Length: 117
Image (cartoon, rainbow, N blue to C red):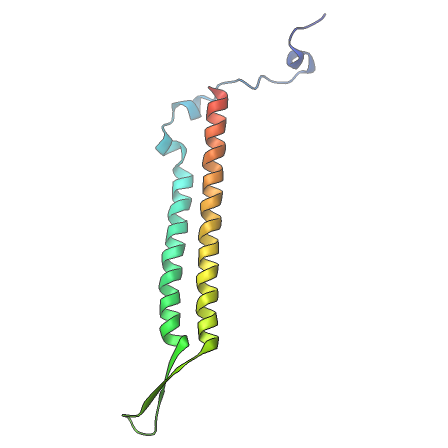
């Protein structure tokens, strides 16, 4: 009754099974979702930078029209500047988070692919 393979005795499936769908896919198809996530991350970064620039010129630099049309005063608003910096830092944080999640997924798929070969 003794078995040389303890996994068979315990009823554990063989971990060396080949996963045919991962083996037959090339890297572009295998990492399609991760590449999309990287694209979303890049879009978020670009949109955040553009919105931070727009916010800077609309909230941080304030033009006050004087009594006469030729007397304009330009002031710097610290509250608007804090909003711009917060928007920029949040955008960079979301971009970095999405990139890290994508890279973790790619690494895990690579490890799984190497383990099943």
